[in-house]
Image (tube, rainbow, N blue to C red; front, side, top):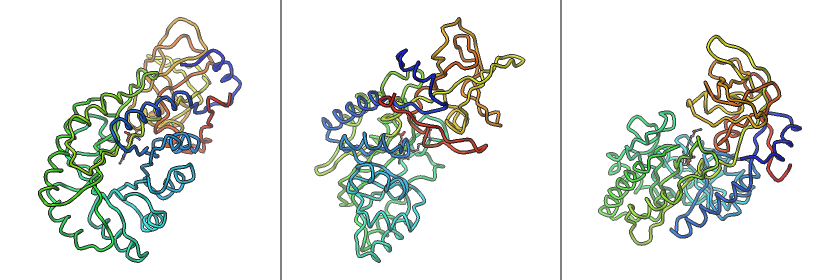
Length: 382
Ligand code: LLP
């Protein structure tokens, strides 16, 4: 929701830009901090959702850790106030250089996806005279019922270690001298809106906890990953944190000494950001009217890549409602933010907000067509 004062200020700013509402970000962080403190969970923010330094500084000020997927992310996170000892490092393809830097920095844990990866980590740790804390990312074979590109825990996924290989994996890693197994890790997908999916994950985790106990393996960290979805149609509504925390509390049967870790990305930052753009031209199509705006798929690729829905609002027109295809200027037909979208009568110069763009918006921007990267405006700057 934007006040008329904010919209007036938008008129004078060069577009397109990401607008981050820091009140929304802070209130979301407070909610997660309260819920996680109550439940005793450790939160690691998934930096890939939005690595903007100002956003990271705010999130780290709540005492959260970070979930990173490259040394560059780890370095950025440390620079923005996250403690190395509260950073986890995920990814199926960690490079030797990234592993070395992360070991030197003293991170909390490597979330590992294969035995060859663990062997490389072990040999680098041996060379550095260190012991590498690791967790096994396990593929639990649970359909997240989300877009197939962001489904990560089913049979054809490249992610995680197969459960039927666990015996062999444990044999191979028990012989390694410079890694120590701290826990297990899961991440079954993103933008998950069915709570029953998390319930299935909890049941699977319980089965695996039994398996590890029966093999006398002690685990401290039970990391359930991220994935909690947001309501793209209602951008002013926060994610269902209470339901999510209740679900995990109720259904995972922890043993003594075990702690739950979570890695929220989208749910923390999604609703605080909007992509603000101006209408360049209105153009008639055969069956539609195009509103061509100055933001494109280079600024926000989610609709083009995942057919994602983001609510689109005209902030400056009070007119009667018409339907438009809202499109960007990039030379691709997929550069479409929404088809047949109801908007008040829209004209050149009107200001358009594409909502719920705080996660995987700025972080996935590109310079295709040699376009400039989107600018950034924070609510306390205008
Ligand atoms: N943990 C791991 C290991 C992950 O791979 C991810 C996201 C997260 C946590 C955070 O998940 P979240 O809470 O944000 O759902 N670009 C896509 C999303 C890709 C998510 C990749 N992994 C999109 O725009 O929808």
